[in-house]
Length: 180
Figure 1 (cartoon, rainbow, N blue to C red):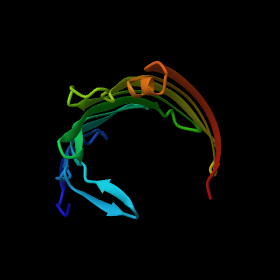
Figure 2: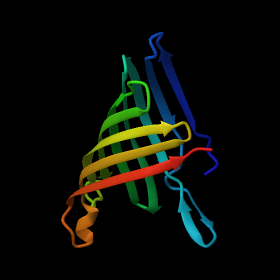
Figure 3: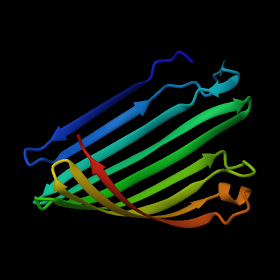
Figure 4: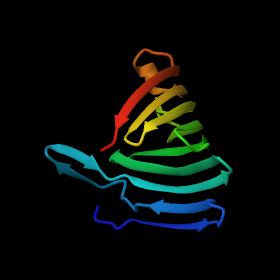
């Protein structure tokens, strides 16, 4: 749509290694604009959000947090203006005692609400996740990581596929990396 978007942020770093940051983003997209690319119609989305984040070191534990709140919208056909309001955030506690081991625990939450509410089947979603991770660096060029992830989400779109809207997923992952 040839419109210039913008973002602006401010951050404060503390002498103790702490950090606080605030950001505003607005791409100034025209939700009614579209163009054809390689035989496909691509739409401009208007996206705006606020983001706030913080870091707080507490000895060998570091707390990180971020939250976002905003919306993204487009109009795929005249008169059908779809606006998705979203919020997301996380809180992470990382443990680094020095040496070869590190661990982290992270809690996430998210929500998307599609407007207008008069839609026959709005594609809303909300949920939370919990992640536990551990890293081991036995040598400078090697890292072994283990992660356990649990996601509990309710997504309206699943009913269109004949499934229940709420789903709980678990994933375990083990990786070995060589750095060169």
